[in-house]
Image (cartoon, rainbow, N blue to C red; front, top):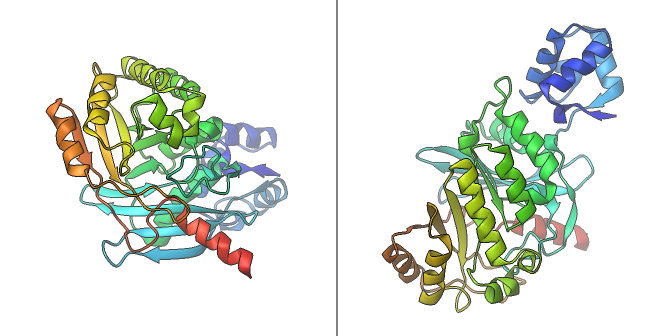
Length: 343
C-alpha cells in the first residue's frame, strides 16, 4: 500500500496518469489530502471508480488525539498524537503576537542521548514519514481552529537523522496548493549532525537553522551531548560558518542554561569567540527539569545574557510557555508510556 500523502503533486499526477487518469486529477487529490480528509470517499469531485482504485492501492495517514492539554496560563496546546501503528508523538501549538507557531516531532523517540532531554530516554523507535510530519501541522490546525503561520522542527527526534523524510515534508508544506507555509517561516533545529548541516546548506532553502549548542567547548558538550564525540564542537562551528556563507541566513544557537555546567562567564566569552564572523542569535533557554536527570536550571541566566551582549551578540531569553502542561519536550509521551506499562 502506498502512503499517498507523502507523495509530491508531481508524483501523484504521474502515478494517476499511469492509471489512465487525466493530469488535473493529481491536483485534485493533492489538494484534498492537504485539506485533511480522512478517507478517499470525502474526495467528492472524483469518480466512484477512481476513489475505489485509490482505496485499493493507497492509505491516508490520520493521527488521533491520545491526549490534549491546554495551558490555563497562556493558551498553549500540547497534543499527544497516536499514529496508525500505535506509537505516539508530541506536538505543541504556541500563540504569539506575530502568529501561531507549531513545534513538531520528526521521529518516534530519539537516539541522540542528550542528558537534559526527556525525548531520548527510551531511545529511538522509528523515523516519521513525510506525511506523519505534515499531519502534525495539518491536524493541529484543524483541531485547534487556529491558523498556523510558523513551524519549528524542535519536537521529539533529530530532524537531520531523518533527512530524506524531513526534506520531503518541507517540499509538501511549502507547496502553493497545500498549506503554503514559506521557508522563512520554518525553523529546523539540530543537535549538531554535521553532514546533514552541510547537505542542507547545498539545498539553500532559506529556512532558519537552529543549532542546539548548549556548550561551546568540547569537554563540557561531550558530557551532556553524545553527538559531540562524532562531530566535535570546532567541526560543528565550521559547518555553521559554511552554512552562513552559502545561504546568507543568520543562525540561531539554542542554549539550555544548566546550573554549574555551562553558565559561567568564561563559557559566554568562548561562544562569542566561536561565532565571530557570522551573524548569530543566541537563544537562552531556562532548563526544563526532567525527572530522570540530575541537571538543574541555571541561576545566572540574566548575567550570562549580559555577558554575551557585552561582546555585541544578540541574546534573548526564551519565554517559557505551557509551564503547567508538561512543557519539557518528551514529557507527555514519557508519562503516557509509563501509564500504558502499568495497565
